Image (tube, each protein chain N blue to C red):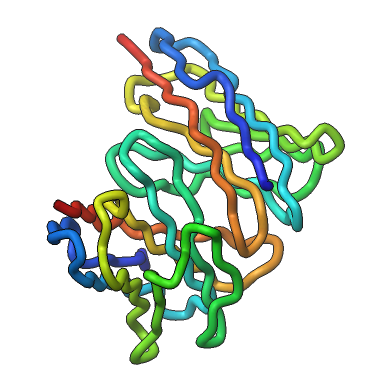
Length: 115
Length: 108
């Protein structure tokens, strides 16, 4: 069964460092998303991406964050200068098409710990 | 601001019991209501609901949407210990807003 894969599964980084979280969406999917979940809190939308551009983003997704689809298969989330409060589980999701009748499939997540 | 509220926050039941999980939503640009099960890591998809009053079923799980009352329920009959998880409700379109989840614990 096709699945969304994320790497690494766990990353520890020092505050102020840049991190890149990687995702390989399901191959025929067109819509890509990043979510985060701070430990013990709810899943929060960060950004949606379609046709090589951001289609929607939340207030969390500030200038420190960027997304890219560099090679047609990977979908990356970059955090430029990490802060302690960026520590969370980051989930990538992809969807075949928009509109009714399609659901988003989630990757297993990358746990980011900023120290 | 979009809002999805789930209740109860937490529930402990015995195996074999039936549970009903609630989700109310206020979401702009609403297209569908999604239910996910989250065990250790990533949410796994359960149901997508787009039309009012049409029940979706998958084994012991079922769900229904009321678009007039902005409400959905998830029912689990004959609960098993493997149903223990956090159940997430989410609504929206491109931007999907999640509720905080209902933590279900099924004890033998």
